[in-house]
Image (cartoon, helix red, strand yellow):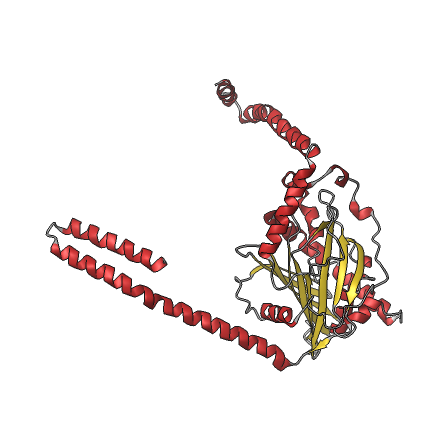
Length: 433
């Protein structure tokens, strides 16, 4: 009652300015108390809280894992850098921070990359890291025949030498998925392929890469298992990625598939936090220049990306949308610097050399994936069209029985209307079953 009387007293002030002033004085102590409580809870968070959260993340990863998941290299979504734009949401993620995580700006640390790009070879016959099933899944994504929801347009942006479009979609379970189309002028698919694969050059344009090392590789298929550590904004710990990657070539189109893979040789640690659900794959091919001269002097990159960074998906979604273009437009200067370095005759890095080992596939082989997708969609359509016929028999019986029952009663229109209403309700329930 005391609070109510105080509040009413404030509302009786003669001017709106006085009312607002008194409300600010009235509410300020409450906000201070909330902030102090959050900070105290953050500082005294027990270690078992992190352990429990790790277990929950492991469970969610096993639930939401998809046929493919990896390489944030691609044309845009160094998703994490976009999280700088959501520092105002700090209270939402403050419970993830431990004392030694709240240090100086992590971007001031110089990134280091392991120059030994090949620690060991993948044993002969062991090609399960990235398989043809992953290629089929990616082709279905490119052709928009994966059976997922429709893509929602996000943005169109451009520079004199680059054009960028982005889409997103939300699944019933799992993080938001992103799709983008980037066209780079005056470059080749081979140059762009090597650029995204070259972990030794990447720190020159990707300041979030702390370390990169190749754990295994296959000299026959070009498959690699790579370990990355990436810097996150100050309110989150670093993230660790272990992913397999492989390239298929069809003509001058390159299907670059990367996904997170389990790898016992890199044990899981509390820091940096492991990102298990991770998928980032792209199709690189030559296209006509936007200048309209009809020449195939531009390169198109179609990217499909999603990952579970251990951040609430809605918060990550806001950050990605706010920081996406600011991150993407930094890629073009990096590509131009890479072109200049390659044309100057510098030695090809080992990772770029591995990017040139591709699995050759034909156009007919790719079309076989599309025919499989069409057959499965036709089967689903056929099954769905058969369902109503099985449901209509009970519905017919219910409605017919209602008519007979209504005719047997001589109680006026109201009684008959009630009987028909109940019968229709039962018929609708039967249809949903």
